[in-house]
Each structure stands twice: as structure tokens, then as C-alpha cells.
Image (tube, rainbow, N blue to C red; front, side, top):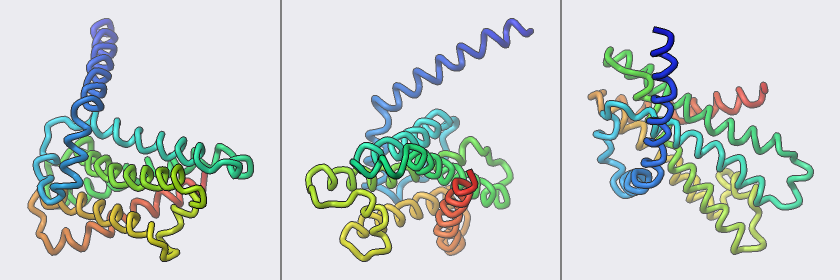
Length: 214
């Protein structure tokens, strides 16, 4: 029995690795297109039998890019901030996405007993896409506009600058994703409308608090 178990583990890993490669090569493009151009037609995405590989890929991708892109773009400021600061940003993003999935799962579990956490993690993983677009936009601004402050771009949500539009858009798109996820198990629209922003904000708040303790 032990021998069979040891044989299955490499096979499962190999299959997951191939599935991840296939998703990055063929699946992520159509998924991004659907999230941004058909955000109200995501119900079927939350009814997949096994979205675990997609969830892991999207969450890890968000964490890696939010660690290294800011680190590469801040220039001389990285000497004062240190690499640990950027690692914390990446970890915070991943924890936030996981908590969004966890909170969504808790709500769905109350309403719909047959709910698998691995499936609901995909809700948080999809929320990575608006965050990645926000990061890419800020990175492009930093590359082509020499006077643009990269770190200031992240704080622009509260500063009133034009780049806050992108931040607000990303935030509301995340809310839409959670809303569609809740509606996929027929939670009432009015209830989902109030719960969705609470889940997104609470998930990010908990992520920031946890990273501050590290």
C-alpha cells in the first residue's frame, strides 16, 4: 500500500504541473477576457469540478509579480526599503486572495452545505486578475513616464490622482467576481450585493494585519 501511495504522488504532481502549463499557455488568456469583458457571466466558472490548479497558479502568480515588479521598479528606493518589504507585499496579496476564498466558502457553506473549499478558493484566485492588471498599469506608467512615482501609484487610491480610477476599477471588479460566486449557489442578489464588498475588504484587511505580525 505504501509503495502505491508513493507512486501516486509523483504522478499527481506531474499531472498538476502539466495542467498548470496548459492553463498558462491556453487557459489564462480566455479567462482574463471573460473576467474583463463578461464579468456578469462568470457563474459557470464557479461550477467547475476541479479548479484547484488554476487557483494555485493565479494566487502564486499574483504573489510573485507583486514581490518582484515593485522591487525592480522602485529604483534606488529598494536600498532603503529592503527586499523583505516587497516579499511582505507579495505575501499580503496571496493571503488576501486566500481569505477572500475562505470567507466566500464560509458564506456558501451556511447557504449550501455541499461546498468544497478548494473550489471556493477559485473565487479568491479570480480576484488576482484585477490586481495584476492594476500592477501592470502602474508598471507601464513607471517605464514610460520618468516622473511617475511607482510606490505613489499604490497610494493613489486615497490621493485623488487619476490613477485612482484604475484602483477603484480593480476593487469593483473584485466585488463583481465575489458577487457572481455567491450568486452561483443562488444566494439572493440583495444579500450577495452587501456581502461581496464586505468579503473583499475584510479579506484584504486581515491579510495586512497578518503580514504586520510577521
